[in-house]
Amino acid sequence: MDEIAESFVKLVLAVGQHDADYVDAYFGPEEWQLEARESALTLDEIRQRAVDAREALLSLAPAFDDNLGVARHLFMRKSLESLIARVDLLSGLPLTFDQESAALYDAVAPSHSAEHFQGVLGRLEERLPGEGTILERFDAFRQSFVIPPESLDAVFQAAIEACRQETRKYIDLPPDESFTVEYVTDKSWSGYNWYKGGYQSLIQVNTDLPIYIYRALDLACHEGYPGHHVYNLLLEREMVNELGWVEFTIYPLFSPRSFLAEGTANFGIDVTFPTEARLQLEETVLFPLADLDPHRVREYYEVQDLTKELRFAGNEAARGYLDGEMDAEEAVEWLTTYSMMSRPRAEQRLRFIEQYRSYVINYNLGQKMVGQYIESHGGTPDRPEERWRLFSDLISRPAVASELE
View 1: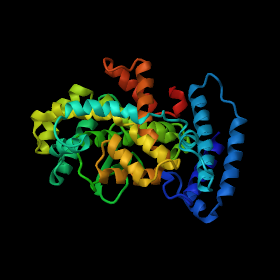
View 2: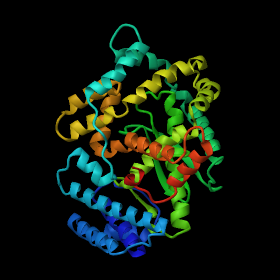
View 3: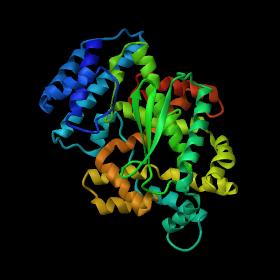
View 4: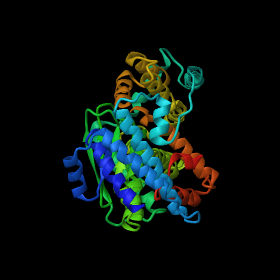
């Protein structure tokens, strides 16, 4: 198994020579990176080696009573199959949106009609009466909740510290873990965690568009604690440093690992700050730091919670656009209508879809399936310690989407 794992790491690095977005993080031997650059394997060569590695893996049967070994075997099989699918896509093989997400992430998002989202918009209409379209009224409402640029870092750092303190109550973090924050522009995403190994991360926040106050805590949890930063460092500590499993020294972005990474990062927001705890933090700390009216916190989150029901609308724009059923303008129009995005934000989202394709399902479907898994195993909101235990277990071991069903 260890030899197959080493082959997998080298194959991911080889794919990275053809796909600049593929290797999201790597902290293994530097000579393997050099080997990947010098060998310059073709996509056909990479694919054949990956097929051979998968066949070698299938010839190995882990002991049925070795739960971690069984999980590793499944994780490696799904990861190799995903790598083969990514190579096929890079080679020009046409796949539908759903075929692609199944092959890369081990999951397929449900479809929702325009009528489904119209029902949610109807409830927003009732909550935001007045003149103009619902999008115009929603835009006018949320303009009162933009973090001033000069306050952004103070608000974000306060949110990070709150997330760190809460996470440390339930997860034993290494004493030397940390990350730095940078503010960047001209990106298709709003935030990104670049894990560097050694329990260190670089978190970048995109300031191209106005940042609403809810994003401060969301980004702090999602990118930091207990999201991507904690997810990556726990896998490094538990899988690499303790067990010597080299496959976890590399993170191929377009792989089943991203379904768990994004799903747990999103669900981790609610685990860390359930509704009342969040409202209290917003009222007493974050809104005042942003010079926003703390008396409007509950009003803001009442509306914000309604918009969460639109989170699957972006999948339909991506599915329609990538399957050729929508052109760019139609996809942007769908996003402004059913995801309640301003046009600049919808255009930015379309850039994301063009760059990352079916990756979009990992956020909303990932969050939904992680939440259902944790709550069905007893991690309900009224049992916070069990909720955290199950969450911590999920982000510190091999896991794929099909295990959550």
